[in-house]
Image (cartoon, rainbow, N blue to C red; front, side, top):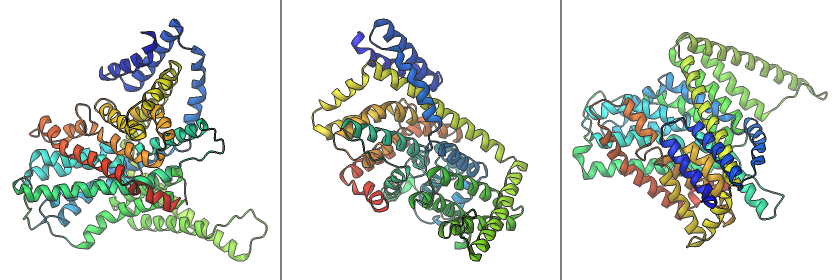
Amino acid sequence: MVEYLDLLMFAALMLAVLSGFPVAFSIAGTAIAFAFLGWWLGVMNISLLGAMSQRIFGLLTNGVLIAIPLFVLMGAVLEKSRIAEEMLDAMGRSFGRLRGGLGISVVLVGMLLAASTGIVGATVIAMGMIALPTMLRSGYDPRLAAGIVCASGTLGQIIPPSTLLLILSDVVSNSYQQAQYAQGKFAIDTISVGQIFAAALLPGLTLVVLYILYILIRGLLRPMNIPVLEDADYQQSLSKTLSAILPAILLILAVLGAILSGIASPTEAASVGGLGALLMAAIKTGQNRWFLLMGTGCLILLGVGAGLYPVRLQRSDLGVMDYVTGAGYMVLSAIGAVAVLIAVKTLVTRKTLQPALNSTLTMTSMIFATILAAGVFSLVFIGLGGEERVHGLLSNLPGGPNGALLFCMLFIFVLGFFLDFVEITVIVLPLVLPALILMGHDPVWLSVLIAINLQTSFLTPPFGFSLFYLRGAAPKELTTGQIYAGVVPFIAIQAFAVAIIWFAPGIATMLPDLLF
């Protein structure tokens, strides 16, 4: 029994999580209990827990993870300002007369919200309240409508920027370094957030295309499930459509473009996203619109100008042009700062910013508490010999490296039925990724496969988060059974997407190789 203490600890964790006790406390409490049990039985050195202070300090000073609250704030502001509703209405009108057009518009809006917010809950709830009643009134099959909304909402985990990719990039980078140390390399390479974002972009768009193809094919095979919307109101000018979706596209390009081009770090780009979301939400209110637009333009000019022609006024060899340019930058900064202050005041007055900040603090606290607790768990698991057991298990599996990877993917998929992506990422992946990388798997390609697999955990019953979000926002006539049945085809599509990336790795590695 003593030699299986690490496996018993993992089983106890599953029971604690399923009991409904807060996840972070379940993880940390299970780890501490088994640490003292292992010490009492003489199979663990309790002094290992002394390393926790270093882990906590490393987490709180991690430059990559600092971007998480900023990206969450960006998404929360866009959600609370109801920008998603306008995008969905505009896209629905654009595709109204196409069979399945409303479903396609939901997928496309889910893609835009994914790239501009990265928050699954906000996207699913918004579309569940806006799009789902419209789809049901239009005669869509309830199961299909629920599946489209749930699946589209989860795109926020695979299309960058997203909290999953941020956490995953940190875990993959640490595992890659650990694997290199195990190989005797000390001049090590690292993996950046930009590489993971670039790797996930094309697979995320591939998933969008697969969803749309499924809706179109389903409309051809079962037209009674996807009626054509003949309502004459579903006509509007191109300018109205662009005015609804263009701000979100510009925000996406600003954030992702800054990261992928190397102009800004993820944290700096997240700051740009947060400011952009504040300005977008304030402009939408109509108050001080022209000054806010001018301030936004000034900030854009400042960013572009400072990148192309930086000026450092502390230098002694500056010419007249440098001083004139520097003065211009100061004026642009002042106008931009005033615009941001006005935007904040507007959103506070309209009570939009307060709930967005509450949502940001709640989600950020949950994520960081889980990561801290997972640090305790992994430390105790290693102390009980779990790491050696995992490495031995993966090394002895039939099929070599591919067999080990297939086993890990199936294991992660099964865990997704019971655990959240954060727990799987910070507890399980640090144990299996170093071994998989040592077997020769490309870490960037590996991260994309795992990201799509983790995305599926939002759809798998009984604890898929998207299912719970939609259940809370959906009309009462839509049953829980219909929601569960509706996501099954989309789970199969995501499994098919994993197979595509597995056999065509260039989809994931081409863009990082090109940019980095």
